Amino acid sequence: MKGATTSNRLKQIMTIRGLKQVDVLRSCEPYCKQYNVKMGSNDLSQYVNGKVQPKQDKLSILGMALNVNEAWLMGYDVPMNRETKEDKLIETIKNNVFNDDEVDQILNFIDFLISKRKWLNGWILNVLKKVKTRWSKWNGWRGFV
Image (tube, rainbow, N blue to C red; front, side):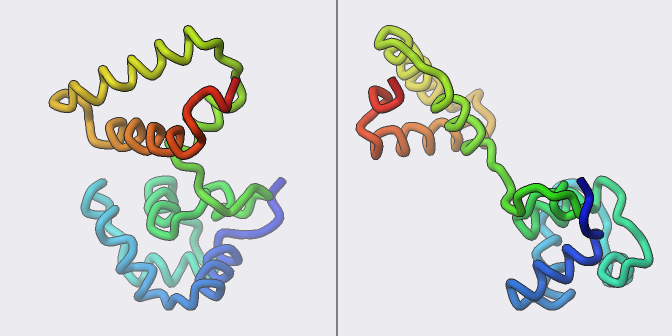
């Protein structure tokens, strides 16, 4: 259910974090460059003042730059925090019960993928490394069984 506007949410996150519009724009710059999206001070000003709603590409940029859930930024009643791919993968694993054989197969597969770094793209390699690190902190996969 939508309970707020993008304007409300931008003002809210800026207040919480003590940000000015120029700070938000600076945070957006690397994402704008990466995804070839142009966002200027006029755009952000219109979003903050509620005159214009950002289109999906700029909403995504704002969500990434502010590290907030895009649905939350749109005003929906969802958690503010952005769910990372790592979090989603770990949550999926936690919600499933694996036997010892499956655990060994999954760990072997992760080791195999990490050994093939040349063809892995950056995000999946980082996901696998973070997942293995978190699992070792939890005394391995056996904690999920």
